[in-house]
Picture 1 (tube, rainbow, N blue to C red):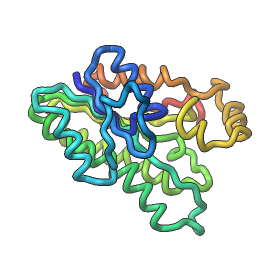
Picture 2: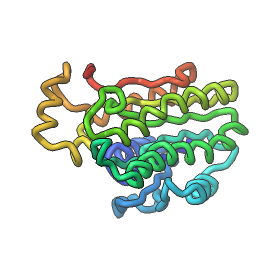
Picture 3: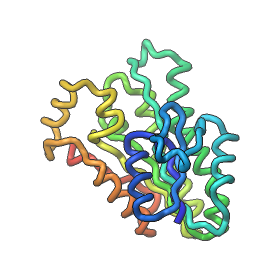
Picture 4: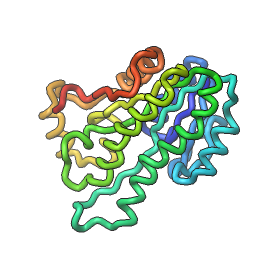
Length: 229
């Protein structure tokens, strides 16, 4: 099985790449702003997921129609601003990367999956798209749009053994939660969460594995948030 992971040089993407590599799967990751770890560089290609040609070339270089392919879309950016003060270019760029980049990767792998009669596509949405968090209109819009896109693509490809699902991530002990959420706010989030902790990356991995192994889960989203409403 070949595992393709966008945005794999840090956070959740990096964790998943290492886990699948340990299981002896063939892994390929993209990076853009963050260089991969020195001992992992051979698994990586610099790809701007906002560039259709670069995404297409990365996929075509690494897979064939005889491969069983899993695509995990982790690449994403954020832009915090209340709507009335938002810079339009920065706002649209979030949509282009988080939604458009995800679609570019999906569009590139689907012909290979279709010919093989097998494919797994896993996207990461967010609890931010469910709660209504001040200043996150761009990020929330990009992540909630994945739900409708996923349902449509599932309907188009289910009969060919291809599934596509989202994981709605809560506040995890990695990535944007650690890098962009202030410590005092993280403490408040933990207090509000019934589990009284941030999410563990191992749970992300187990959920991804579950979606890979289960064909009848398709076109849906799984909340991975510790019970936070």
